[in-house]
Amino acid sequence: MPVFKVSLKVLKRNLPSILIYLGVFLALSVLFARNAQSQGEEYTRFDPVKTPMAVFAEEDTPLIRGFLAHLEKSAVIRPLEDEENLIQDALYFRNISFLVRIPKGFTEAFLRQEEVTLGKTVVPGSVSSIYPELAIDTYFNTARMILAAAPNLTSEELAEKVEKALAQTTPITLKSYGTEASTPGMSRYFFNYMAYSLVSILVLGTSLVMLVWKDLDLYRRTEISPLRRSRISLEKYLALGVFTLITWGTLILTYYVLYRGESRQSTSILFVLNSFILAFTSLGMSFLIGTLMKSRNAISGVSNVLSLGPSFISGVFVPQELLGAGVLALAHVTPTYWYVTANGLISTLGSLQDPALSRIFSHMAVVAAFGLGFFALASFLGRRQTRM
Image (tube, rainbow, N blue to C red):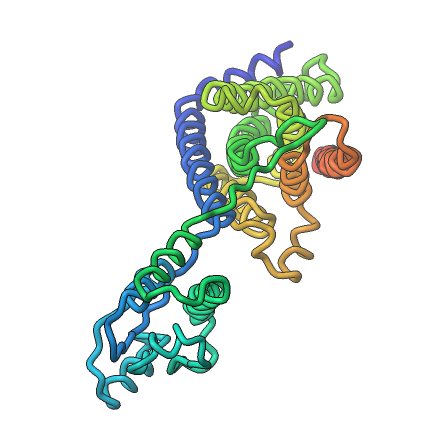
């Protein structure tokens, strides 16, 4: 198998540059996956925003002190002088978004269960004022219910009971029955970024081999050899297939080493299968590009365009949920989009018996169809160039 051996020698000779690319892309994939995972956790975690506000209290009672302590859980109370110009400037420049004024005699009137109101000033259209509004309503509505049951309470006793009532929380536990826990998000992000790594490395290695066989002297030697053209093409495919398997296997091995816990999930095998199909498609695309390439200097540029372009519009670097409809419509013509979409579905599976499994396999079939199309087009263009 002379063509197979020569192709492997070409890859071996360029092994240092390929390993550099592999190391860089592998490091970037792991780094990006970790960053994306931490961002994903932030997006799915709810943290109430503390609203900047000012409070002008014309009396100091236990009830008011308890109210201010409760208010500080959802707001940042900033000191401000009670002057109209300063208040207007603070609201205009958004130093505060909410202002509460507690009139003198408020506590006594409240304890007598009379109708009392707080003075409120809010920045028009401010969404952040919702939290302090809820805090005010929660505190004084709770105090009114306690007073309705025990109308003879003093201000200090009422503040203590309200604080005790509001300190109670309801624990929430989310349980899953009959299915395994879904695959953690780190696997999804790692395999998404694998699309960038695979395409970059395979285009680089395949183009180097294809350019060598385009050398005029080498081409003439193979033409007069007893080897048939079909045999020459087959040995090229085999050599580059071995290169693809080694590259893909290295990335998969890295996944199993770095994420041992997640790799034990039953659904992780679907990530591996999806990436294997992408490796096949990337090889076909690399063959097509190698067939069209005529200059070694253009290899790096083409590799970057083919890996970065689809990655940006298909959901590798930017989640598909944040991309516009026009960008996603354009991304449909790339195999990366279907690959990333399949990874997203896999990450939500509860088990291998999930009904969504059929959709995942249909996306994988689309990626494989892209690969077959690339191979067919590369074969057609290769025969056409030979005739010319």
